Length: 96
Length: 197
Length: 58
Image (tube, rainbow over all chains, first blue to last red; front, side, top):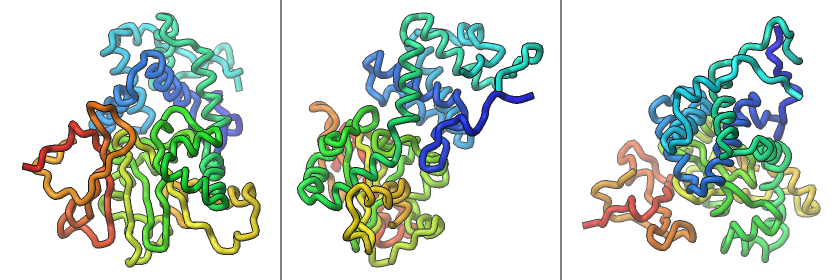
């Protein structure tokens, strides 16, 4: 069973992958877009990222990033953890 | 590459969570999927150390540009079209025979995206983040870069708005190289400061 | 991130960034100042701080 991720299809930069997996790219872009859209200083997100990393120093970076994103959108009353649970897909959308 | 209909590809929890965040925000009208696609594309296509390399090559060949780089790094870098998130306050620090510069973000991963793209994994790792400020010379030696004891190592912790780009020393034997060829010798690691050219 | 009991900053250079109300500084200190005996000569750190994080050296 393939996981749908083909290493050759991921972008390379200086011989290294820019992102290890598409969800990381999404997480990054959502953070950037959200801060910009809401007119927030970068620090509004960054401070949460710092806190998540400090709390879980060994956790993979982008998981800390996503946790920071989640805490930010919940604190800004844009959603709730329950709504996120409900919105979580159970299968990967096809890559195109 | 696409999933078998009878056995849908399982999502890791983290993938599902990120997808949920995106879908909730899109549904609320806060974000637009195409805008997110565009940002991803921008990172993949436009951002990377080849940008910073151009800045360095120009600084090496154009003394007036180098001046501008130090007096207003953001503006000078923007002259080459490199600007945007994480490049709003650019400070260029020059390596000399007596000073070697090293850049770190001790608390997370701050990095000058427009000029260098996204940071490598090791830059974000706890070991680099703590050791760069604690024992830079030793750390650099372990990474294959020996800085002599009489050279001062200056470590820049990107803890607020400023993002740093190291201007490496121009290597010997490049005097006759045209600017675009020069850019080809500049590595990402030399612009972070973990490598000398 | 506070520098409690901060004193004798070797060098504080004001950056262009930050806001009028909260200017941004790059605070320089040597490895010896920061880490004492565990520090090394010839190693210097620059940390960027908004003014609100700097304590009045009294």
